[in-house]
Image (cartoon, one colour):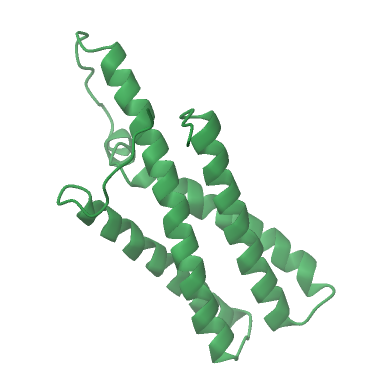
Length: 159
């Protein structure tokens, strides 16, 4: 039975809100880049599209978070009586915070696909259309990647 986290409960609501806030801050960075570095002056494109992309990135990071939680749950069930290992470095402590890995996966893949698709689109289209296509293509890729990780890494089957 797949693990489904109740996001409205008292335990996971702060994690969900943190993930949504970080996704919003990430899109604010892309708004800044679009307005000042890429020279996109259309406020409807620069404000409305990133709001939808923020929701898509939040959903993708939520799926990846649930996948990692499922794997951790299985790992704890299999190794209940083993000794706990000490975490040595500050980087490992930072990466073991529950929302860091899903957000890093989503943000790195989004940024990579965005840069490649923007460079390809700017050769044939204007700046506004290149921005729109790059943002949407990157968000769709992140959603597909989150679905792939959910099915293959955590082996969650939805009925």
